Image (cartoon, rainbow, N blue to C red):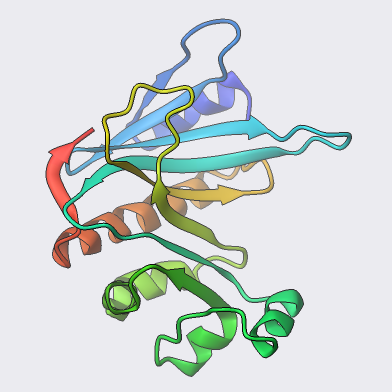
Length: 187
């Protein structure tokens, strides 16, 4: 999305548009319970670059917890057959449609037991939701920062779709707080 689109989107969601300078891409920020959720685009490298949309927030955790939830596909089905690690949630339909990886099966099941979280996940035909240690290459994040992120392999222009991603991120944040993962300190 171009700068004009991001400015308009920031007004649509009552967020904040910002751009650091000429060489930096525009972003939109919106705060939820002390956590700043950021919307931005980035372009992959290589011979066929793709513009992607990323929605993320940084958190500090009380306990070490990571997960990755994404759509099941033919390759993941083959991987499961050959022993790829996938956490079963106990919901056969959900387990058929999604791959769930985590360092803590109990905590990820607690997260996914929440019907709001599952409902928001199921709103997406293509899902790539991850909580992982934040990279510190370009940023000045505090030690122990984690990134909750949703990434698409396309440039999203639909404000309602972006708003739906924001809702998923906020529902997951709320549930992470409910299951005692989040530290009250925000970034």
